[in-house]
Image (cartoon, rainbow, N blue to C red):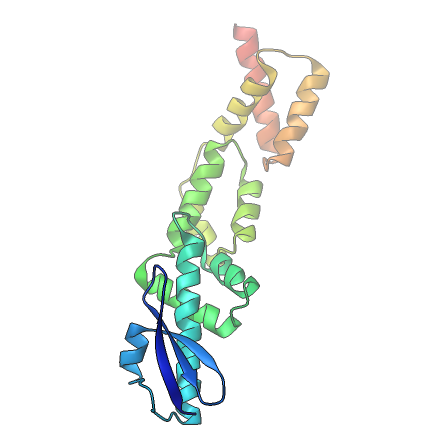
Length: 205
């Protein structure tokens, strides 16, 4: 394939359009023009065209990944899923995620700790936190490290009860509150202990 022309495109980013003799047009950056020595009249072999297309796909995937991340924390799996959902090839998505990990823009281990602390602070139990780690695609071998040394599930359960019951001790409301604790990921034992502690505080007052 021969390049017929290279035209600069308008817009925020420095982009060019390389037009080929078969009618195909490919958008490239100034860096790609330099890297692949692109100029009008240059003939590119099938291998060179294939390499250029692969490079363009990876470059586009990286740009999309950075837009997806923005100021948010996401796991490697979440970024990969979102890229694929936007039409990026799965292998290219994986390569993009590796690049992000090398940059430090994606850190599953650190993200797992943020998830644990966030949901514990919101009053959720261990089972719910594990569900959240799974949903966000955090590798299981990172779960225990993120949960290591984490305490305060009893305190979180008690705080939830105090906000929900507001000093009341109606049996039906206590039962509903205990069921709510179970739905939030607390074990039967943790829910029972929280209820007993709450009632003890009510009696003391």
